[in-house]
Length: 265
Image (cartoon, rainbow, N blue to C red; front, side, top):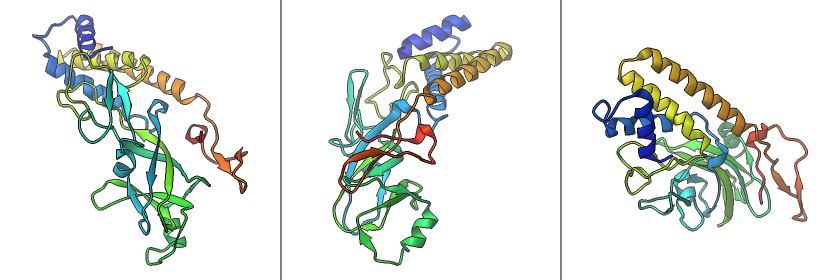
């Protein structure tokens, strides 16, 4: 559903026009609801991506921005017939979370920060091929990956993770070159209905009709949970491991929840 169509739909339901609620205000409600749905789940499967990045000798920390910024190997996609890649609008949405890492030879194991620094203290000069990784926050608050041991040479790391969603609604562009009435949400079509329910709730709230607003908010919550169950219950493959002869096999058991498992094609 296009941005203008969503505004028209909500106005028809609430029986109002642009003199009651302006396009700008409805766009704000749409962006608000869109972000609420997008960030209500850390790992929506339709935002899953695979990227690569190269380590640097004697460097253990790599920011998510570095991982997802390379236009040739990073996050790039086509949405609304526009290619989003690189650092200029329409720009790459980038990575917001990493789920798994591997090299050409083995899968890296995720460990807690404390465990990593016990095995590989910050004061130690241990280097080699990375076997473990953890997530850290730097002084600016940005998330970054820490590899253990510190890479001794340049190595290609293959990452599976989740990208940010292309912005929709609002009045200021984030990844797009600008906000347009023909924009569509960056998610599967069934989620459009959930968003219209939220925006209708906000429109009724704006018109001081709390009774109808509360009804639509309850509908919004129910439909969102239905879609969450639908999209999270789809089976996911277990991690692909590599043995000493580089032949692939499936891990027979894992402690990871089903929806956190990944295959490496």
